[in-house]
Image (cartoon, rainbow, N blue to C red; front, top):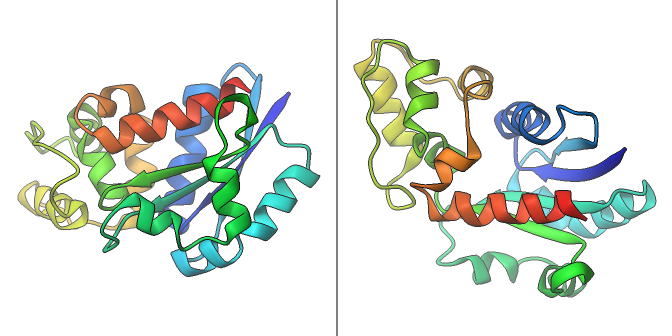
Length: 191
């Protein structure tokens, strides 16, 4: 079985991606995902060299780093926070690329919001229809959607609730950053 090492910023990312990746790509037992919670962006960036060695040493087909853009002005600025070695890995092209970077332009919540069907399935009392993505603050907007539906937003619980319904392909139609991230994930899975 092919395995891919994945590093995420926090516990809600871990819960979400573990389920989504397995459901969307691992259901036939052909691809496995080892998802690591790095307990914050600073640690993920700082430990990326070590993760690269761990992923390679474990014989993984590819490595994937999943981060939020947060207040960085652009993805290139975020990429520049990694060591020269990791930056070199991220610049590799085609079949030479081992390490992939997937960046939510705002936060993970902006990717949730890009799939209105999954939002409505996770919050049955909402009539959420979707809006443009990658522009607003996802967590604030998602909190408002939850509040309007009579519930409070809890990042860990919501990650668990939305993951069974979430479609990266559907979300890619409304979120350019999800489309780019999912393309990178699919490239890693195809190695």
